[in-house]
Length: 209
Image (cartoon, rainbow, N blue to C red):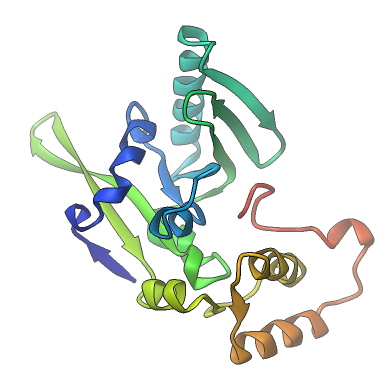
């Protein structure tokens, strides 16, 4: 994984307003859209621990109360609590089933072109005073695979059926599995035990891009 100076990624600055007031961070597929100069429809927000999710949920609930013409609750399930900004036409999905630091979380994503995170690192400057500094972390081959539109699976595949379905979704956008990843995915599916039909859609979280 690579960490980089945020000032090399000025196109991400518009995300700052969604990170103020809580300790969540953004990771996943929205960065593909941003770097390709495409419209962002939804943002996946993750948390280091459950109390951070609770704090963030309260923050957005307060925004809904203060500005109901802009903010509204979008949906909720066992893994995601989501709000929608009418002004920005963006859905923010707060993930409540996966916790960890940015590097840990994106390491579990299936494709390298989703392994990107934008987050605040809190640095102590005085006894009880902290400075929030924005940083990014991403897969070493992120930009190469994004530019060549390659879907590369570089880690274990915990939910191969979900990854298979998602590969078709990305195919519609012009991304294709590399040969090695095709072999790896086929083998992972072949090795699956007998599944219930209800298990075929299992994924890391319900809103995963």
